[in-house]
Length: 367
Length: 104
Image (cartoon, rainbow over all chains, first blue to last red; front, side, top):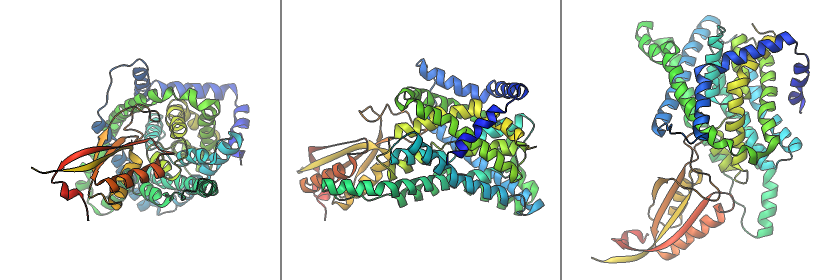
């Protein structure tokens, strides 16, 4: 089951000097753009106790705009795609997404539990984060491929919404089932009643949480209004959410600045979580990303699509997953999962992961 | 003005469990509760950084007769103390219109 984990090893071994220099070039092209630079600024500011402070309400407002915009544009493009090709181009990538959504929490769990020797609850808790996805990573990856003149397939936002839930659900069910025996043994030993499981409640909250409701909801809104509204009446809405990418990328910079401020706080926890989790937070996304780029290519995604697909499959959730894990697996240490997702994998993906996935997608033959 | 001697139960902890605690307190006999968002530092939680990760801290307060108050504290300590960042305490209070909080 660590197959995918090891799959990147032969790939790296096969890299030629020319490919390596191409990767370095992509890295440079990505790193020196405003979005990752704002993230770095946030980290530096926290580390030197600087004065940048993003008001919470602004952060929430930006998150709402980003999610609505992703959903709305996704729905709009989906309607065009549906109009032109029916479901023929979408069903394979959707199936690949569902498959990877179910696979990534399991591979993560196995690696964490058997290679990393973490407890059942900790492994399942971290696996829930890695099984789900990060909408911000999607947004950054999408901006990257647009800059490289290889825009992703239009229906990628649909895949983001498909990917959000199953990973969390599978990891939590797995963790709850496996740790149930431990819990009842402990309850018998202490003489206290077994604590009620909040799995159902947690899953309900994931599905009805803000990110899914906004993104999936606006996807439907965008789809329906594109299908039934006359284009002239639709234009103002399109202009607001699309705004030639201007508004979206601008507020994304503010969002990433805040993410940098938070990640900077979490950097101190890196020492606490140990080298295994740091390696996991980098290698697991690479393995999942490679698998996603490959399957995405087989499912018919274009170069930009494979890159973004790899980025979303490899990314870890840090908004929907933490409360769900906290409710279902209270014995899991939240410092481990949040540090891995937010202080290791997220920065890695933003700075290095996305250009690497781009090269992986090229390497598997995506165009 | 008549004042009623009652107990004030205060529970401070991570947001994810606090609404459950509030509702469970009502089930245990409290007639209502107040929830406030707070900030702070404790042995389990780092400084509250985080709108981003949703790691907020909430405070729930109940005014109740002694038996109900102790019932709530016992429930919270059994159900949540082991794994969550929570602190709970009890204080004597003199309450105006205290009969409203004596419950059914």
